[in-house]
Length: 122
Image (cartoon, rainbow, N blue to C red; front, side, top):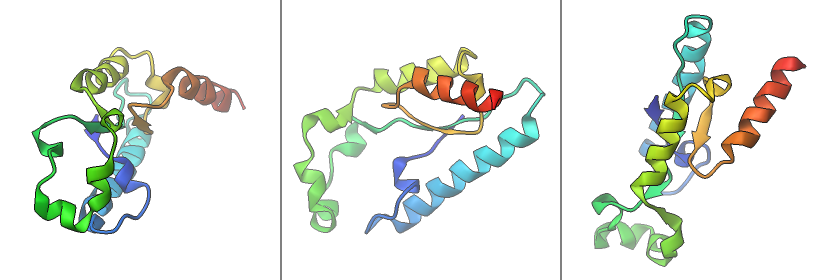
């Protein structure tokens, strides 16, 4: 399981290196999952969302380039326990059908699993 980000899915000003690295990590996981298929080992790229930590207490220098961060509502930030819940759910094996995929903490994991199972039957 590696930590990726939604920033790796779409271009964003002032985030080119970060976004490119997260896109690369997500692609690596997809390839790795194919290589590991049938071995009992799974790989996932997870996005924990914007977790409320010291890191997201944005410094003034960053806000000068990305003022929209200062306008984010408190609900945009998640407690670390939600990210831990995603990791726990993936580690349980219940979502192994999602191996190789990018999974964001706010996605409906049951819906993703149902979609993956439908795709496997097709």
